Image (cartoon, rainbow, N blue to C red; front, side, top):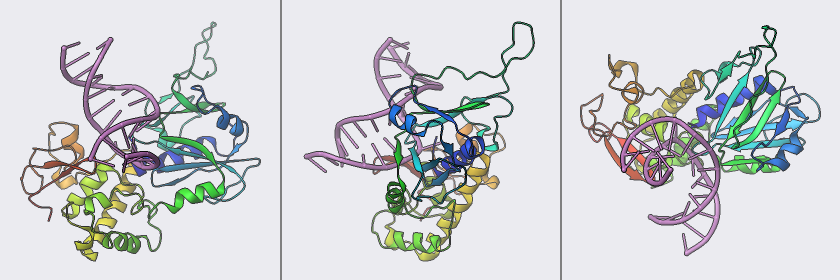
Length: 305
DNA sequence: CTCTGATGGCTAC
DNA sequence: TAGCCCTCAGAGT
């Protein structure tokens, strides 16, 4: 599920649904019992996302804080490969970003014995739910995170120090920094794009499809890709990942190549990702697949130079 | 029912 | 590079 666009989207959703409130925080699974007890009943402040990392500060009074500020206790979540948040609540518990979320249930009300609509009741959590945030109108359940812990401001800043520029933010200087970081390495550029110290947020899909979109061969050493082409790659990551955040889905096959009647979801959505053996949309060459540093890499040997 | 793989990343060797 | 962590849908038996 989660490349960086998902985390930014979740930060928006959890901010909209919980910030300013004092959610009940529990750990149905038990593995975050101590952390949950520390956060329970305190004010959730607006959340932050950097790359694939999610941070939500909890404090004693409402407001908002800069990412990594001292004072609040920071809930830090990394979803890893298959962590996810799911939502359930009544019609008041809805954020743009929760639409399309897994196991989303909205507006379901129990029917009272007298036939009138009752109030929403929180569903029993699955026993793998690491954290449940609950307010009067709904719950957010976190399952399967790679990391879920409480940090102080210094702990947050330590995480941030290991992260490169985030294309979804695209702060001033980020583009130049990305280009410089790639060009000082001889590692294949396809590997560098997935290195969170070089760009924070892109995962296997954006790596494959954005390299295809700008025509870069993923095996080319970073030091041997021109500044101009790396700048174009950064710009493409910015555009593609912002679209992904907005739409809640990765759709990286450019419209001009989208088939009328796609064979399947993969052909509809992707350029080369998971399309090994199928013809390149641009040049017809069969899309290739290889292992790169333990992850599946997809590319077109015909037009990615 | 068992097995597999997935949009991630850390640590140890 | 291998092993490990986290979960579960979907495929195979």
